[in-house]
Length: 374
Image 1 (cartoon, rainbow, N blue to C red):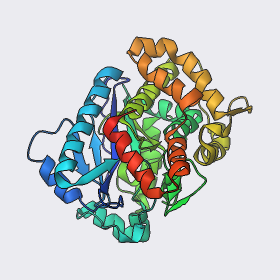
Image 2 (image 1 turned 60 degrees about the vertical axis):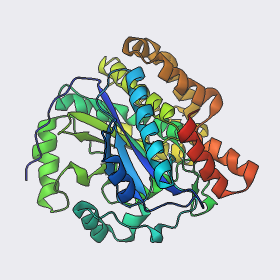
Image 3 (image 1 turned 30 degrees about the horizontal axis):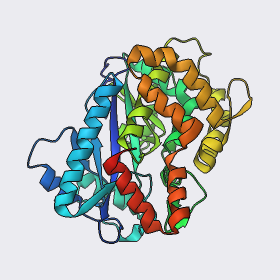
Image 4 (image 1 turned 135 degrees about the horizontal axis):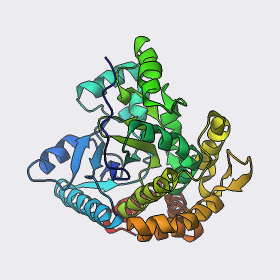
């Protein structure tokens, strides 16, 4: 089946998707309660979109299309408040975070949906191990070639988003020593990683995708788990490397940081992307997952090493005019505060564990962070 046509959208519009944990209030383990929660939420209008995910202890929520930080944040807060109220009625807690600190993957239940059942049959135990939680950000593109240009131009900034959003230091009851352990689960899938270096949509569809489809490996873009992928049905690119932050305020800031960065890249004042940019891509991504903002990254153009924290702060300063034009200076302030002073949410969770010596208390702090904000 040919890849569906790319439907252009307004450039630099944005939307956010968040995968959230459903948690038992009595022991703070994951709760296979998505059916009950979705049924309750379906009784009245929801301030966004809410859908099931791979296992029954997670849901995904999505915003509408936005152009500015304020309305995006407002909708995310309305979604959060609606979820928390519904969860209270069912004695279910909700939390952000890229992983649950101590859930046992083999106890998870696959949600009864044909695609999830098919994926479970294909990927075996990896499907249940995919009970991890990410934030996806969509950015509107005026043309498919613009989408591919942005996708590849963003490659050097991927470590920023991993490090800033990292909120998964614990897994299976232990500190993994990674700020983002979640992405290790994603890397296990055979069609994860980076997209092929193609800058023409015609070449992508008639060349790469047609060849991949002929192998029987893929049928649609949903079969690719790339860090950034085009979404032709939406007319967007979708950034997929972020852990779900603990707060919707951080989620909104990350989306607007990406929007401002794309506005800068579309000015085409930087050197255009090229295949050699990816020579350091895997190294940079590992550094961001392992060490977060304290990791080191290599600039693919200059081959110079710099700390991810310093690169974020330098980029923030450069993006101020773009954030001002987009009405997102408050979001840029949140990114600057995260990189310079507050740290990412992996650091927050480690501090809670250091104080309590309890992974249950870590979950409790995640629940409270989502409920009450920063």
